[in-house]
Length: 176
Image (cartoon, rainbow, N blue to C red; front, side):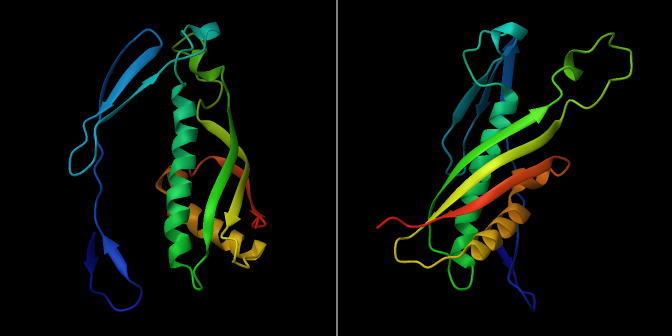
């Protein structure tokens, strides 16, 4: 990351670029991420349930979106926790998130008619259980601060800005 020397808070300026290619047939698509610049190549395959034309052999694209949200929030929370004053002694976060959207919109007919709504996610809800290091004395107020800073900085969360979030982050007492 390139650091700009400005008075006030420390600000990093950089642009991240992402790359993938893919192909598909029917309800299934294979997407390849080439790697590079220290990253390994990866691939994912998407599918749909049998009842809507897929083979149900892989997660749906929207399920990957929910997985991306959880992955982004946990990695962002780890960064935020390290930089909170005093440092938040994060051990782990267990997510139980669900999402809803209007499933009829993408398949509504006729094609030239106005869509009866939006196919976008409407709501993400659930809990994130935050576990702290055994010797820490964290409070729910600090967990709330961790959540606020995390969701403000998480690229996937911010990309889903039009979605209604009903997620609660809960402090789980450390087990000795």
